[in-house]
Image 1 (cartoon, rainbow, N blue to C red):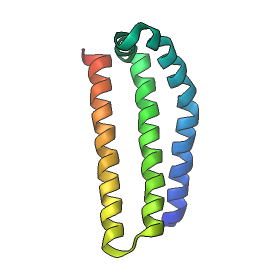
Image 2 (image 1 turned 60 degrees about the vertical axis):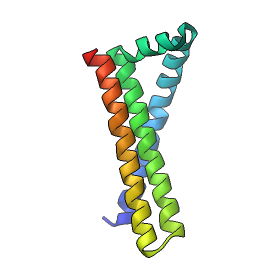
Image 3 (image 1 turned 90 degrees about the horizontal axis):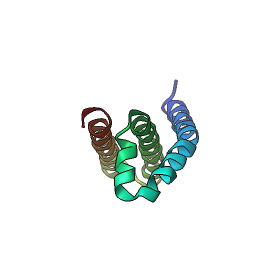
Image 4 (image 1 turned 135 degrees about the vertical axis):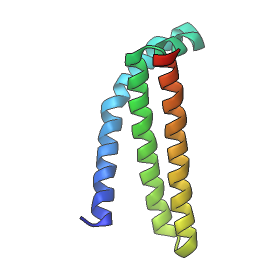
Length: 110
């Protein structure tokens, strides 16, 4: 399988992850918002709310990384392209780790 083919498949899967998890995240967040910030924290503290939000954020971060990879590959060459792709992957990984830590800590450990 070529690099472009696997990139396209990953892009499609991340897109489907967003499509499936977005209504759940929006509905749940709208239910929690009337209670203010504490209601949102309470919602994230439940396993269902935390895991749903985590699935949505992980799919969104993956989709954004893939989109930005395309921009970097289209407009940059050589060392700038390598640096842009590496920085993009590190930033997306950091976002995923931070969100996963916070949600798991709220929903399961705290």
